[in-house]
Image (tube, rainbow, N blue to C red; front, side, top):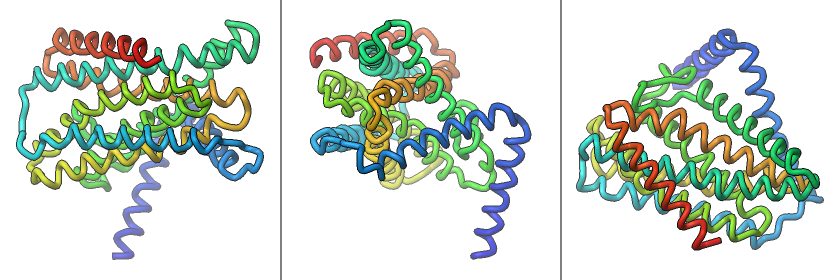
Amino acid sequence: MQQAKKQTFLSLLSSWQEEFNARPGLSILMLLTTAVIVGWIIFNLFNIHTSIDPRFLTWALIGGGVGAMSTALGAAPGLIVKKLSAVTEDTMLGMAAGMMLGASFFSLILPGIEVSSALTGHAISGVIIIIFGMVGGVLLMLGLDYYLPHEHQHSGPCGAGHQQVGRVGLFVLAIALHNFPEGMAIGVSYTDGNLSVGIPLTAAIALQNIPEGLAVVLALRRINMPAGKAVAIAAATGLVEPIGAVLGIFLSSGLAVSYPIGLGIAAGAMIFVVSHEVIPETHRHGHQTRATVGLMGGLFLIMLIDTLLA
């Protein structure tokens, strides 16, 4: 057993080295970005000067928990439903994509520009700070996409070392790749204690997790996984969101500029997931029009929620 684990680990290292050699410049940039983000989180975790209001941390955990429960709620119908029509799935995922895009702009980018512009005293510099954070979020997700083994429904297994991971494991890692930036966004949104940012974002992510959770459990059932196990795995992956929420609130604490940068990082990561994974999945069956109608419906819904809850 120990020898097998060692061999798997060595194979994974070899796959990472091959990935690095294939795109060294981009890999270095992604790794540096990831190191800076992780380092900043660790610094704030242990820095006694970092002051996080316990209420804000509690709100972030509750928000992450709501996201996790909504994933479980979406997965629950998988106990009795094994398959939906492709057009229904694509429309549902299109709606989820629209909600994620709306949440990224209305609850992350626009509040971030407002805060960063107030900090710098200039609108342009405020926008640049958000762009800087968004670039960081995209590079973080690119690094995870290239180096984390997972499986996209539309393109199959990918990520360095996917050959060493079973199919169920690849699906689980793919779901985690979706849920982590959502949880991080929830945590970041409560950092400043602004409920007009946090509550609409939490509501948006919770709503879009329902069709996403159902799509995931149906994908697991398509590979003949028993219904109970498929629902349990899909629901358990939602636990990534409260973890991401805690990391998000620490990422965006400390220096005043950390908050808008954190909002930008979360927005960039979420938009990356929508463009790189969700929208391509909704188009692969030729149902682009229905998927686009779903996307617009999700966007309209988030506009209403943001206005009602702000």
